[in-house]
Image 1 (cartoon, rainbow, N blue to C red):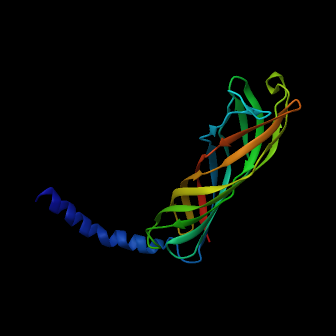
Image 2: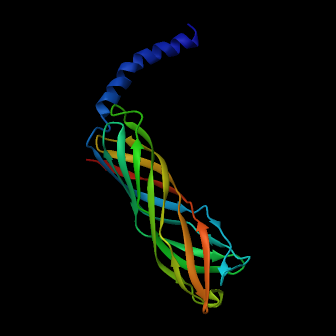
Image 3: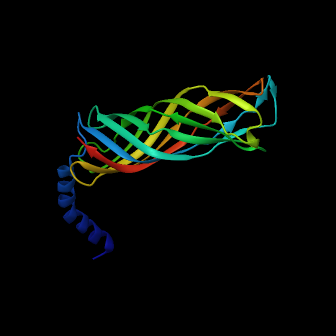
Amino acid sequence: MSRVPQKLSAAILLAPALLAASVTAQAYETGDVILRAGAVAVDPQENSGKVKLDGTATDLEVGVDSNVQLGLTGTFMLSDKLGLGLLAATPFKHTINLNGVGELAEIKHLPPTLTLQYFPLGSGSALQPYVGAGLNYTTFFSEDFKSGPSAGGFNDLSLDDSWGLALEAGVDYMLTDNIVVNAAVWYADIDTEANFKVGDIPGKVSVDIDPYVYMVGLGYKF
């Protein structure tokens, strides 16, 4: 017997068992709530404008480092294929770097993100990949310049909050009827303007932070 018929015969024999397993899973249905927790990393892909002092552009630009925190996500299933998703986390802390100077400041932010999620496989599959699109709101706080020589007289730092588009892709896998393992990635359009002073001279710089956000964790379906 050729290999193709052998594989076809094996698939036919396995199909009832696989079908039974998928039907038993009954992963997601209308009204289900899935809560997930895990490690979430924000990896900025920043594009900095030139630092301006008293309205005059300099050759200085800024950079933003990555940070990892506890991530929390939730999904409310509007149907067996559509869900409303929310991303939250403990506050992220980032170091702001100034080219040619070094570490200059530290900031914190929270990036709650609301998305409409699409689950293509429906309720009969234990494997639940999904994609989503929606809005990100990022609020900045605890903006402080570091002390020491690199601070160079910088003071009075504040960053504008941001609204922007968010995209996501992820996958859940049902380990049991209620426990899931999850991996997900988001892209968020985060643009801000930082205002500050150097001595009494006003300064500002616009930065497109635009991070990728990665998360792995466990969840529970209610």
